[in-house]
Image (cartoon, rainbow, N blue to C red; front, side):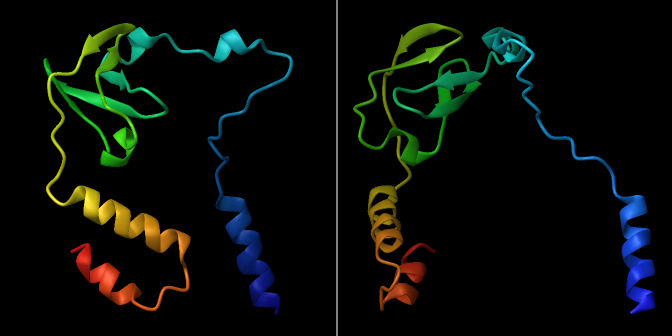
Length: 119
């Protein structure tokens, strides 16, 4: 027991402070905002998704970020741009629906089959 106390004390002595984001009530919100120019490769999608500009005319994002939208335009550096084409990973829709269904049915008996379908 004594050894555990010393070990705990030693651990507490070597821990570092958390580098957390702290939002103070006495600081105006505007002080926490970062201009969009700080992230020129960030692409805003309709809804809540984002993507990353990986080339002059190519954006990569997670497939689920565009589910439920007919993606017609994206916002890059504050300007709306037309979308020419959307490429989805082959089989994405089937896999997405399978995982989504399984998430809403945690007692699913065929969970191993679903997992193997995702490989």
